[in-house]
Picture (cartoon, one colour):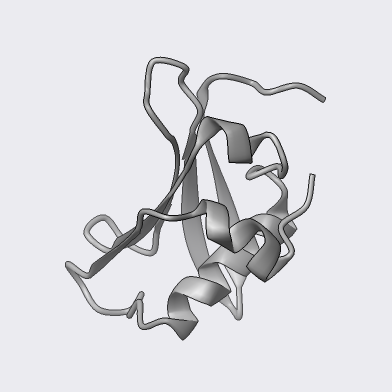
Length: 101
């Protein structure tokens, strides 16, 4: 399956909580942006280079779940309003978390 080159959203449940994932793969952007909201004001985002993004599928529910769990482990408080976290070196997480195609 090839890249969709668009901005798509999906909802996912992790540990009984619903998260809203927005994956932005618009070619004019410098990075592939993976953003997860737990509320309107609380989110985390991960930036992946285009080259690295070909090695995994950010739309797979398991990959979304792994990224959400990782953000929680490193301190993202998803229940706290107006809380955000940004991971600029997302490429390093592909192997670390076992993100798959």
